[in-house]
Length: 164
Image (cartoon, rainbow, N blue to C red; front, top):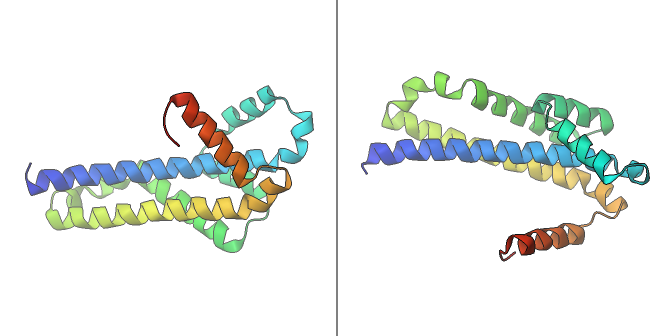
């Protein structure tokens, strides 16, 4: 494989990683919306929660953010990071390869694309981490501690037959 082929592959791989992390953030927002419903947990069945989650995954990321903001006041830095992540995610999905077509055909252009995609990956990770930290007091108040997460993760790994 020559350098150009490897670099092209790396652009696609980094685009895929960025989109994966954008979806991870989306899942984090849906999880946040579930956490915000925990005060109602005695009124909800497992089926209610599953239907709520499924309904949220039918929404756009922008609609999920709007729903989240209506349920809790977000710290300004988190809100701006989530808005930036939303804008970058939408750009990647709807415009990226079309607008970067000229860059894609040159080595230096692909280097620029790789740096940009790595920055996007970092943005999505930072947004997800800030969201997780902001919601920690809410989830812990209702017994969803880090230990509960770890136990669920171990249970899932055991079910799949893999090491945690």
